[in-house]
Image (cartoon, rainbow, N blue to C red):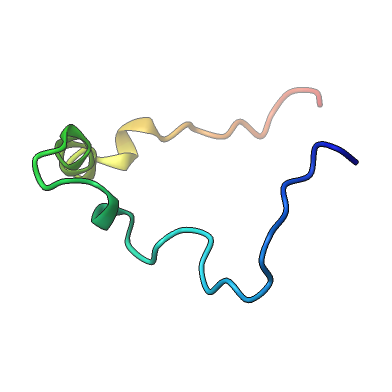
Length: 54
């Protein structure tokens, strides 16, 4: 049991409610999030095959 990290049960959040508050406004992560929001998710859809053997 030496690998457990002590914790506080009264802590309100493990992470802040908005992770963007951790980063400065000019961080590249904001650009990546904005770019990924523009990617159409249906471009990654996979057709499900119902024939064949399990």
